[in-house]
Image 1: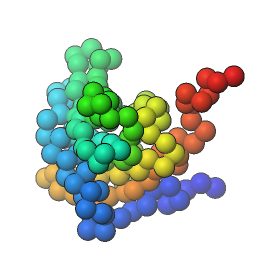
Image 2: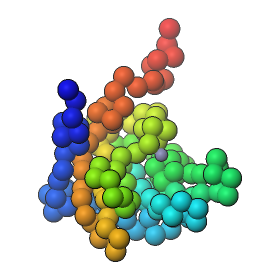
Image 3: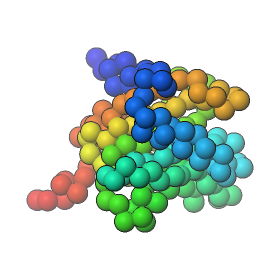
Length: 155
Ligand SMILES: [Zn+2]
């Protein structure tokens, strides 16, 4: 049986590498820019490219809901806009009473387009004051195994 413990490693912030900590801090800071007037569910993201540059994202909602941009999507869009090509890692910051905040299925698929099975995903759960409550590390291959990708189109 696959359990959460197998794919989501709980880790202390202080045990993250320097660049991972920077990624987490950027995701938390980006969350402050979220436009989440309808759900009140603010999310920040920070994407690390192949040159160790960091690209920011936050969720941006729309009154019709269907036009909502997810924080991870915006961070990846900004990575591509910069001219970078590869998503090496991404940090996501949100506040949830649920213990293991993870990217939604749409974002996992978008990560697959520019990342790999080894793309690191760092999920940060904040308390109501915006302070780090929990940090989890996983990788894209664990969250979206057998993903549909550009290789899938080759017949
Ligand atoms: Zn999403």
